[in-house]
Length: 137
Image (cartoon, rainbow, N blue to C red; front, side, top):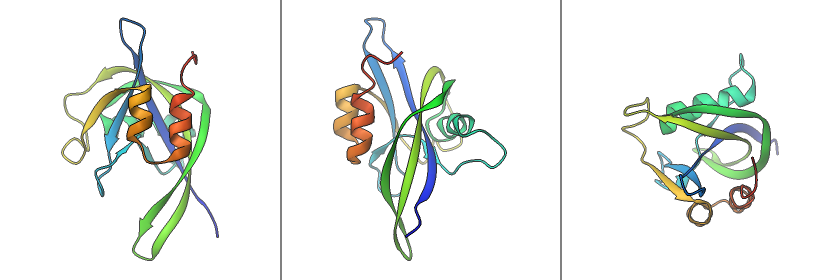
């Protein structure tokens, strides 16, 4: 079976006390906590597409690191059944939160500590990526 590919941003910011926070958004279908992700844009580098997904889904602007921090997989539900999706993740340093954004009426967003974010997401491989953020520049 062919695996479909997506790209994602892992939005982070550091509090004044040095604690690293992760921004999660709710999915439109199930309301579970996820990171902003979508299909690669054909005319852009993947890390740039990840930044666009962060703006559209989470309403944040910032700087994307051009090197992936890892990959996770999940099953996307389609009318024909579940499709495996491999998601390449890019760290996204949030510099600004927008008051309104394209999907603000469809999603909630919330900042979590690393341990809270890891506990909130369902995908085991994404949990590992989040917990590995400790000590990354």
